[in-house]
Image (tube, rainbow, N blue to C red; front, side, top):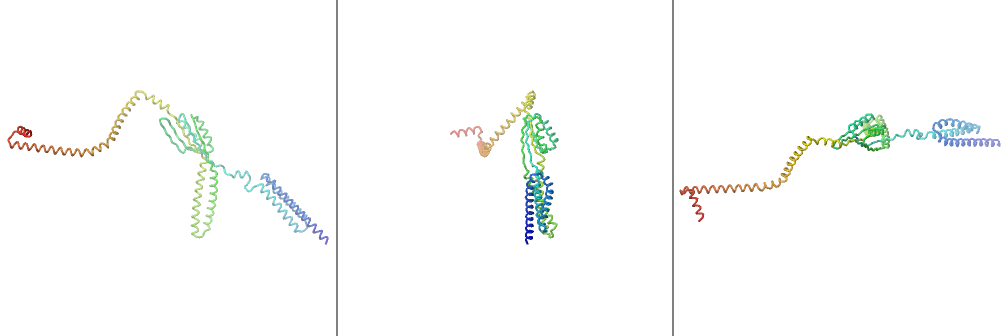
Length: 372
């Protein structure tokens, strides 16, 4: 009986010893996990299999010495295997974080998507030569001209160019403009960061492509016509959204790849105008000025006449409205008076012929009668 008790105590002591050894191995593995986090991923990955093998062998030896029983050996081996697996997984987690290493995360992070735009104003001494030089710079930089406008007045000749150049040659192109040695130059540069929008579009595109693949799979498995129609309608909507997202991404990519530069160059021509005026001060110039002055006088006279007629038009209209009826009344009265006078003359002639009195005597008698 005492031998059995001693054997049990011995077996119990060995089991405690094995459990203590397993706990020590587990603590050592956890400490190794903490230290492995400070190391690089390559060193941790290389040391993890060796530590695992050593811990497994130590655990097996402790289990063999713990008890002659098979159950004790199996328990010790299982604890040793678990202790060996935990440090291995911890080492792996320390060597390779869930998001990847720092280098991998830096490589996986998207590059900054920035759209650059510049405005340049240049005063030049020779507009034509400067325009030619800018066209040569555009060709050499690999860019292209989007828009061009030109204007000329008596005092200035100017032009505006909107240019697209590769973004990697944006700064160099601006430096080449300064090398043209203009009389004066002003420039401003703006940048627009569209990285967030581009990343959002990329995520949306992946989600829509996944949805498209799922709908295609559903269509292949569908057996009813109404299901096919429903899936086809949803698929069309998703594909339209995919094309819209791709179009916006292409637009951003193109504007990021090619920067926009708006250039305004101008030349003042006041001196050239003064020289031409000095040439025109000769006989021909004076003659042309005299003709121009005479023509101006004639034009001014007719303009004044037209203005006077326009001012008198309302008065003339009123006079016509009132004067025409008055003239007609006066004319009719004069006509009737003339007719009465003609009738009275004819009556006098008839009376004279009837009395046999000469015309002069009858007239004197008529006068005498009137005096009486």
